[in-house]
Length: 266
Length: 246
Image 1 (tube, rainbow over the protein chains, first blue to last red):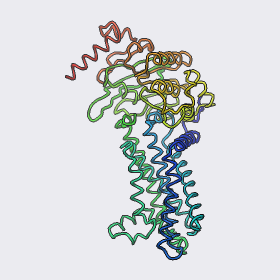
Image 2: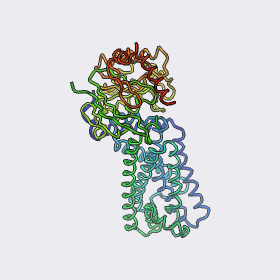
Image 3: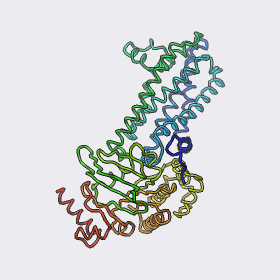
Image 4: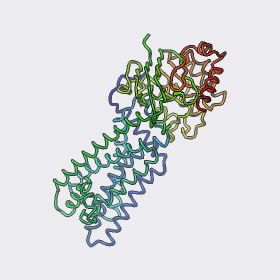
């Protein structure tokens, strides 16, 4: 009754997981809040600060673009980490482990869900920014495209990191899905250059690939064109980060099976 | 005949305590086998190693010719799993959850397969109910539907009738017997209900402290242990286990 394709990568299994995640999010009011309300709150909050304390439209564009881009990381991380946590909360992990689904298929499905969430959030932020503050979301220019790609890759790395931690710590790992983002926001120079941070924190901030992507965006906003060097470093750093995160998840899965952690999830 | 499931010399320790100590287990196509033993004997750990959810420290597992853990994904095509304690995805309706698992197993015509299994288990009234709102008996029936909708060759069940009322437990046993008969599905189950084991299975693997102490037809295992029934043997083993712990 089954086809012979189960041994290889299956887009049908990916789609099944995407559909399940979609239904879970549809029926969970908290997820609607995170997807629809939080981005609007953020864009209103930061754009209004820019309007109140800035001179000209520079500060408001800077704050708006910062929050627009940060939501790429934010939504992708939340989709990945909360998506897997949903399996933990509903004690579905053992059910999944006893099906032919592959780790890479599951990760791909959470990535697709994350991209869909990101599209909705970015659309909302752009609409509110354009409609209420007369901001052109693309005012930074072409630099936005590579910067966004880097941020998505890095967001996926953070999501995988949280999934790996969840395999070990179960539902108490929820704090990491929020905590990593709360840590990243001030340290990665979303709204200001690294030099604005206290001396000791600057070295940490420079080691985060996101920082270079936000630097490049700021240069674009100030009319400085595309900072290819910054983007290249950010891209390399994000690629390394996602590679390390994937290695971490596979290592955690191995430990999960070796140490019998599955009994914590049943 | 080549066994459908072949597990040899399985060993597993947790924090220095040996939970399973050299268990060898084989299940042939269409066979009905029970793993029994007191709490802590290693039944669930053995099942989870057979399923690839726990990796054995020593030993090997083959299912339908596929070696675990390397070929776990292929092996799981031939396996269905349900447990009395295992819920289904909370925020999905029963039909949606079954469709989800049908897609994960790449069942042809998944909609028809879901309808068929829902009809077979007589749970049409649960079709549009959210899994999070099911009673434990309803959850068990839906769990068995989930485990059988891809027509596995081996159905693994961990305490399938635990905490069910006699009516639902009877329906579950009846359905399992029919699945075995009609679809030639082999059964491997754990249970603490020795009458259920005698009724439903043709071979018993008795575990004590992670080791196999008997393997054979229920009546023979009981007789070899000097007892009139499997239940009497179980009680004697449990008393012995308690005495050893004191």
